[in-house]
Image (tube, rainbow, N blue to C red; front, side, top):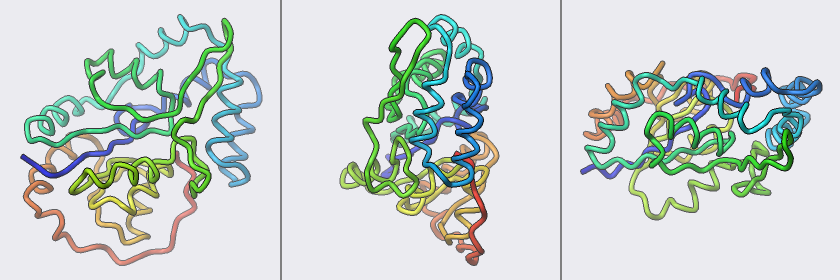
Length: 236
């Protein structure tokens, strides 16, 4: 049995697309793009951005559910979960996305038993929605709705070693406290710049191929790259 716990981002990591982005593109009223621009420019945090954007969604629950049934996950995720389960590696999903959407998609693919920590999507009218933040923190460096670093710190005492799997800015803080990182997208640049022990991956097929080396301790011996200047990152 392994002493690793696997913390995994959802949007753009498990899911092929960012689920919130697809909902805004399909159901968002005018104004959500301006909030996106404000966030990218660093004038507002992701929590304020997402709260405003979700308030601009115009959709019924039936339309939401239909949209979510059309969302795809990484085809290698099932084999990855099976290996982790067989080798005693618990998987927890940490997301700055929408809990309802994540649970719906996971259930659609028979992964509804995985533990999820995310922002709370609440329906407040036939076609109106708001976002709750039960996992926020006043000290969150990224002003995220779900402060992944805080969530991880609360449970850190029960874990021996932590692997973080992610792709963007909401994963930065927890990547710094993890023992190792499987990084996609902008998280690769961040890990290189901050000298964080990591392995770049494109998908869960590559992540699965690395798990035996992670469990054996071989990945921990990988030399860290020299630090580079931090990129201007806006990916969530």
